[in-house]
Length: 312
Length: 235
Image (cartoon, rainbow over all chains, first blue to last red; front, side, top):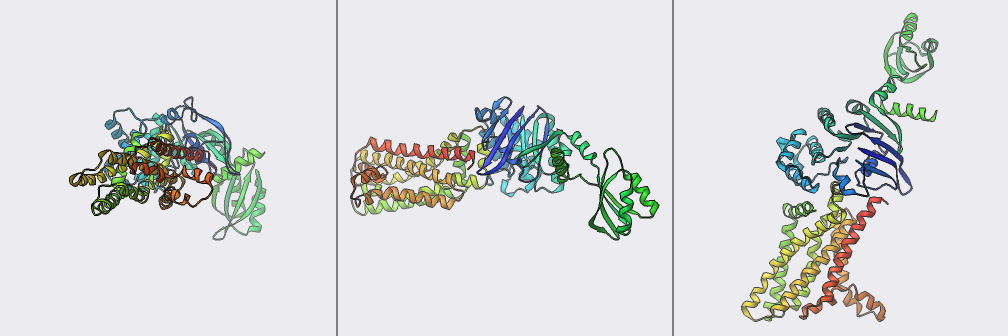
């Protein structure tokens, strides 16, 4: 469906992308993950033909984006980070404009009605876009990406700036789209990608640092062996106890406090669940555990682990 | 491409721009027409047409300033550039939209001539030639305006820039007579809109001038496309 080969993009001296390659199969929902400034939007802008790469090719269904841009662009529905809405138009006027712009040949009225229904904007279709709420504007933007029923839909940070209820609605919508379309969405929120995507591509500093099925990434997170534990008691007494627990490689106190409990960061040996032995060891000495959390569930932690893995 | 044309045309009259443009150009042309022909008791329209060039210089930037600058500022150009429409198609569609508005305004201004025919017997050919010339010069000015609008995301800067370029092109003929070096004068005269225009006001239909105005259109629209191609590769 989509093949991206060795994209390199430079802005003057700054390198935004240094050799991005991946391909996407038909029907996949891909999460494009990375911190701000990693090169997500740049990659998407190149795939959709908005900007050009210095090196590399993009094939959409076998069509190169620069060789035959009109055919390639017809196969993509794109929602940029900032939805490109003409504020003075009504929703229906805008969708009609996009319909004509994309040279659609589906039956117009029925198709626009369908699209409105899918993204749930039928009730505001005669209102001027300027007066809509942010959530509705975002959905009008998604609607415009669906016009012409393109096989590949690209959404750049589709949930940014929405309230929690709207975020859930948009995620459900993306999941529903995934039934019939190939979808790529970018996000910097790990849980969002976990919730809706089959596969994740994680990029950082213009390079892909991980590309795998969501289960694989989840497993990687699960394998994580770092914990933060709050233990009540004097630091000088607790620290040796923790260090002696079998399976603990490293343990160091953190600056965080919860009442009289001190936080410690603990790293365990691979394949050993240290939580039970740690509980028994501390209980025996009479130091209650006030809290325990697994580290590495945030995107930043994954980055650190992944980059460590690359370096190793 | 037709979709862009339609949207631009519509947006002129959804916002106040279209109406302001019509009001300015029709009011000014009516005043100038009255003063230069009716009050002067003559049916010689040459000074009217020359003055109209300066009216266009003020009015046409109103039409062109927003065409690209606004799209760029609001990021809506991202929709156009990722749609199956070529850059050339986009530029031409916007040019035609502005030209259509100008063309209609020009026709409305031409109603004034009816009064001349009512009171005297002017040469219809000369007047027709002048209307065609004014239309072509307007098209050239619009192309210049589109080019400047593509360079900035500030509409005011686009309008003033267009105004400045047109002003220089209009005055270059007058400045030229002060330059003693023939070769410089010769080259600068290529850019003079006024010297070519004078043939029309004198009653000659000058094909070379027509070609000149049409080429200005092409050159500026082409350069506008190049601006967009270049921007895609990012500087």
